[in-house]
Amino acid sequence: MTKMEAYKVIFKDYPDIVSVAQLSQMLCVSEKTVYRLARDQKIGFFKIGRTYKFAKVHIFDYLHVV
Image (cartoon, rainbow, N blue to C red; front, top):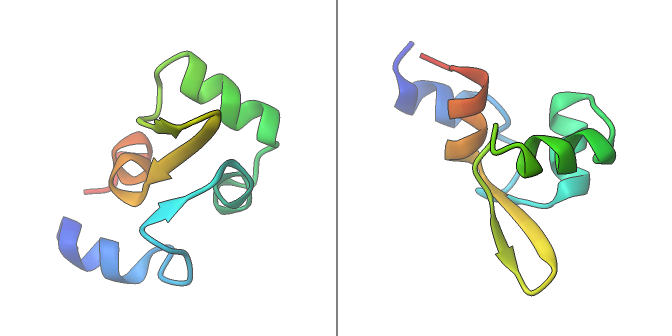
C-alpha cells in the first residue's frame, strides 16, 4: 500500500486537520498522552492561539505508515 492509498483509507472519517480530542480517539490514548507526544516532539503539530492541531500527514509519520 502506498502512502497515498493509506491516506485515503486509514482515518478516512476524520478531517485532514484534527484536534487533540480527535487524535486521542484515533490513537486510542488519552488527551494527556497526545499533549505529551506533542511536547516531546514525537508527533508534528502546529498551534492556532492556544489550540494544538495535527495534520494527518504528521500522524502517518508518527505511526510509520508505509
